[in-house]
Length: 421
Image (cartoon, rainbow, N blue to C red; front, top):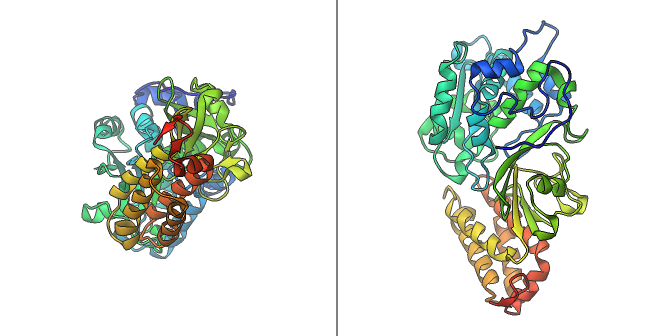
C-alpha cells in the first residue's frame, strides 16, 4: 500500500493519508489513536445534511451521490418505522471487488477495517437500521472478523463471503446473494431503497464509501471538502496496475490529473500508450491533460477533459503494446462473466467478443467495424443489469482511442507492435 501525500488537515485531525492514517493492519487501539471516537452530536446535527454538503459520491463504480441514496432509504423506511424489526432498514458494506484490476478495497479492508465499521454504525444510528452486513471475498474475512471481535459495539454486524465473480459486486446481486445464496443481479428497474433485502429499505455502498462516511461523521463536510475540487471533493483510492514499476494503491485528491497520478506511481508519461480508467467497465484514454473527475456521465469522456474513476482503476498500457488485443481479451472475459439471465448477455456479449477478437487479429475488412457497432447497439440498454452497458462502453472507447490502430489492423498490420498480424 502507498498513498500520495495530502495537504495538512485541521488541528487534531489526520494529516497525510486520510484513509490509512492509523497505519498498516491497524487494530482498534491504533484506529482510535489516529482518528478518535465518532463524536456524539446534538439533536440539531444530521448525518444526511453533512453528506449532502460534503458532495461525497460512491467509490464503487457508478459514482452516485452518497447523500441521495441515504435520503432514499430514509424516506422509504419512515412509513414502517414503528412496524418493528421487519420494517427497519438494511445496511451493506460491499467489498466484493469483482473487478480484476482493482485491489483498493482489499487494501482498505486489510489496513482500515474500523473506518468501514464506523461508517456502518454511524449510518445505522441515523437510519434506525435493523441489519448490518459486510460482504467481501474469503481472503478478507479473517481480518474483518478480528476487527469486529475487538469492538463491543459492532458484534451484531454479520460477515458474508462474496463469490469470486465479476457481477457478484453489483448492488442488486449482493442483495440477491443474501436472500438466495446466488449473486445474480436484479432487473435494473427496481430500487433497493424501496424494496431490497426481504423487501426492506436497503442501502448498499462500497466499503471505501463507508470509510469516507465515517470521516464525514467525525469531522464534517467542510473538512471533507478541504481536499479535491468543488466538483469532486475529498480523496479516493485508485489501483494503479499494468505496465508499471509495481502495482500500487494510491490515495489521491478528487480532480487529480491523470498524468500526476501516473507520476506518483513512478510511471514516465512518454512510456504510456493509453490508460484504462475505471476498470473493465471503464474507458480507454490518452493520459495527457485528462482529469479524474467524479461528475458527468458514467465513464466521463476525453472530450470534456475529465473521466470518471469508476471502480478506481488506472491500468497502464505501455507503448509497444496493442490496445485492441488487450481490449479483445477483456471483452472475452466479460462475456464469460455474465449472469446468463438475458439475451444481451447470453448471446450478444459472446458475439461482440468474437468480433473484437477478429479485429484484434486483423481478420476482416471495414464491415467488421460496422458489425462491432451493430452488436453494441443491440446489447446496450437491453440487459437485465448494467453488465452489457459497461462492456459496450469499454468497446466504444477502444474504437475511439485506438482509431488509428483499427485502420492498421484492417490492413493486416499492428501499428503498436510494428509487425504483421
